[in-house]
Image (cartoon, rainbow over all chains, first blue to last red; front, side, top):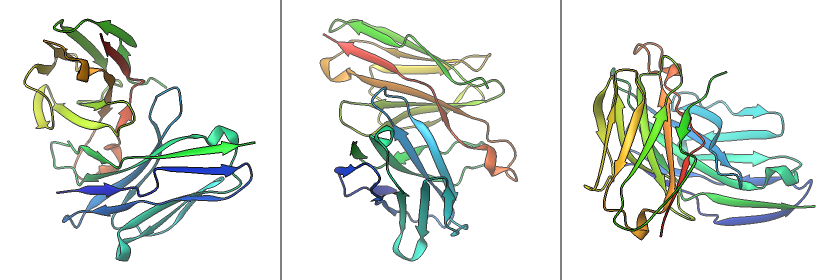
Length: 118
Length: 118
């Protein structure tokens, strides 16, 4: 069975602070995919990143960066110089390798609510 | 770029009524997923379809049914609605492509349908 744990329920920071959202996952698969989604107050799920289990390179995209460590089954997300617009619920998710038919459902963590105040 | 379309965006029903939610995937996407997100919860997978056949099943109640039509749109039918069915229902679509091209198996989420059962 797959499981995603986001231990931080809510994080509050002041603008311009750096913040790291933790994600720990469990899977018996050797090939899998990890995702981060952002859910702002408006409710839609916004895709941020996908990483496959064979690619442990860290990634940076603007103020966002991700640290994937297979040894500790973690896929942490850091926002540098946070802004008020970053306030949202952030979900980490895990999926299995899709079969030839292609389906690979997502298992989500409980989410971390990030509140960035001015 | 075209996105996943869900209708209606908001729906209010009484207990024991029925509801039908519709999902129009991104053009050429052949896989559709339904997720249910209760208040303050993470999205939970309900059911998925690949090429008009059910491909995976999650925690979908027996009162719910779904199908994917020849034009790849999908409908989630919910009967005997209960207060606990009040949630945000997301549809996602993907195009797995060939096994050698896994990158295309990214799930794109629609804006969601907010169902309120009174």
